Image 1 (cartoon, rainbow, N blue to C red):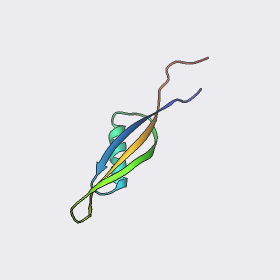
Image 2 (spheres, rainbow, N blue to C red):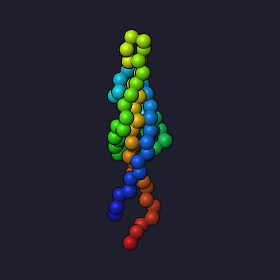
Image 3 (cartoon, rainbow, N blue to C red):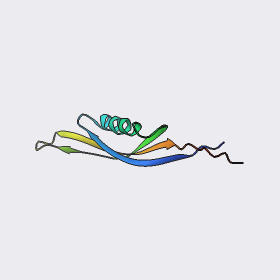
Length: 74
């Protein structure tokens, strides 16, 4: 039996860190996508205030998940 996966690109942000932004994106994705198997960070960014202090962190992820195959191939 072969395994098929699909990759989608998602973006999100968090106030505290890049890691929190990643966790936010993955947690939100998990509410509608099942069998998430991995991710790859595509882009990292953020916003800063007038004094240069980061105020938010943003990430773009490629999220990979398994595709259910109900057809058996012979």
